[in-house]
Length: 156
Image 1 (cartoon, rainbow, N blue to C red):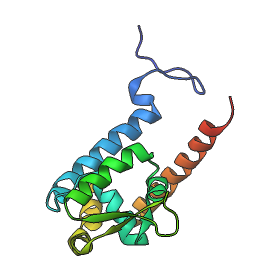
Image 2: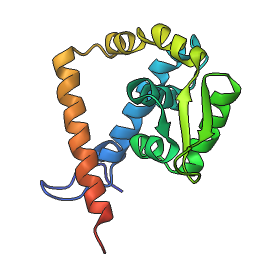
Image 3: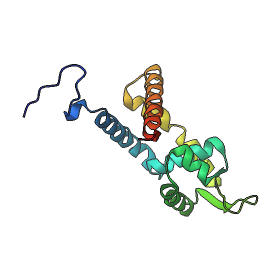
Image 4: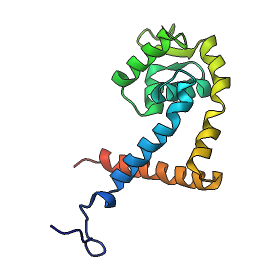
């Protein structure tokens, strides 16, 4: 067994050479940096993401919320139940379409928005990166997500 990297253009099976592992490690580190900030708000990271969508869009259909978060209904539903139990969101059937469930922040959920306003800046400071670097990285990651999703969606 060798630790040598393959020649240029060759595929490496070294852990440190894997794009997926770099993304995984970065995601775990960022989520860990969020944890103390969100603990102060009584939120988990996925709950925070749900609230970000609701603060941005207002009342939203669960289907649209799941699409915005790139999650399936089975993942979003328990998140909403916990947020509803905490008094931060309310769910109700749409008056226009009984099949659609709408979710919106309660007064408590809206009040939390003010306290959460400091989270993005605190996380930016934790990264040690400047705003232009973060903007460029975010743009590259969105481009990677888009192209990878397109490749995954292509028929085999």
